[in-house]
Image (cartoon, rainbow, N blue to C red; front, side, top):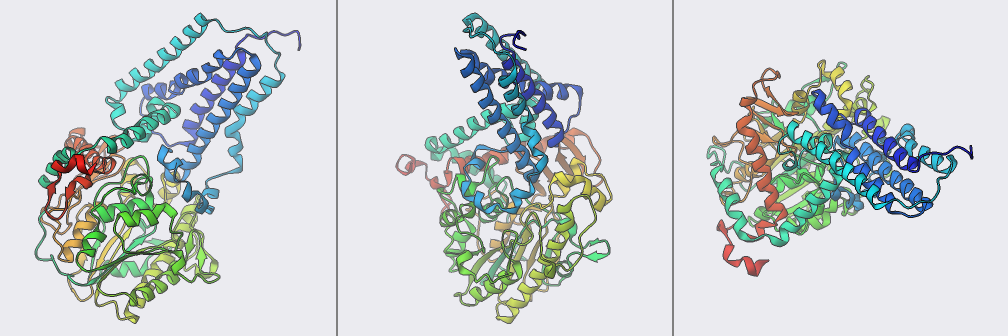
Length: 632
């Protein structure tokens, strides 16, 4: 073995080759990225190479073989960790890691079982290339320590640059204006590669942070014009219907609409919610969509309070908790409401204690406000039935009118439930997650029933309006096979978009005006809809949503990743579908909405990243352009 000579840069070539092939294999085995043609497959294959050539090529500047090999091994390990972190993250979020997510460290301690469910023993194979590289360094014959000539290095990096430009050129041909679609992370990874995507993400996040420092009131002019031109007049037949009543808003954790009015193996999944869909005092919205991003529940809170879109690259609750907002809580404070949020979890989780101050929420009833007895906790915290009981007790002590927003926990991934709380058996698919989901949804349904009973027992029911909505999806695309079994149909991009429907209920006791509202709407419409029911004028508010009851309400729902739904079409996976048939239709049917969806997301991002509401007077609707210098 000692007499065998190997090429001088064999370890470098081996490191590049193994990481390249592993990354390509992981693309196909661990991520659900749709490849539509040969060119896309070619791009997917070559896109890791330019970055790997550059980053591993730095070893050519080391003079000693030992230092060079040490660098290669450390770099290989770091890249393996980055790739695996994205795999584990994707298993639950069906998305890729962004820079702001890495700084949400206060959440890490609360992840518990959810994180454990996303890690498997076989994941050790994601690091097999590191082990092989270590073995090669240790046991392959050593080469003579000879410095790399500058001409060789130049030629090497010219090759790396050529591969990069080839990749970008092919990607631009396949997907024009690719780098303007920073909200579509799957598209970026598929075209420029996992590692280049993370570099681009750092650039985008740095750019957004610089936006606030450089922002001034003039940037609001165009945004304000857009908001005013799309403003919907209230429907005065229902405006003020619930004026003066208490407002109780319930965030139904991970509840999707496919379980409502349905059965699982002969078992009714949501008997109480089913009754509400037909209740004379309840408006039920079956074509209502969540619009959250990586911030999940915190994103839904943000959308509901502000009628703005969440950010595409992280949770607003973390990245922009110091901004100025015109929240629903602030509007109701001015109307004499006592505003509060109830959530039996740590106050710092999702940075809520800081963000609620920015939203002008008067009191946060966190885990310290609840007596959690033995057996009253599961998954991420307090079970919903005792949570609702104690929350209503808190409400009974509040000065009225009050606005209470309740955040449930039991129906949370990984959807475990003690036997005593199981009202129905598990489902029988190949996904334990989906199998358990039906049980925790059934428990949630029972808890909502108990909430109504508790409110009646405390004499709060008649004087309250109860709004309930699903906060985000519970079953990700990783469980499409099991979902196809339950639904009895293939899960196409169209069906995936339709599975983003979450139930929404507005219950007004004694109104006798309940009905099923088929209007296509989203979480961004909740704020103006509720405030108008309470008789609060929003004509001067900077909001992207519209009152669902308004005759001017447009059936156009934009998802955070650029997909959208109208009453006629669904745009998903870069394909236009007929909403009624679910079949692919002519691209021109979606064309007018694609640019507008991006424009609307862009305006909302400008407001958040630039903290532009500090330049806006919500009472008069005036832009504070003259005060720009002073207010910055």
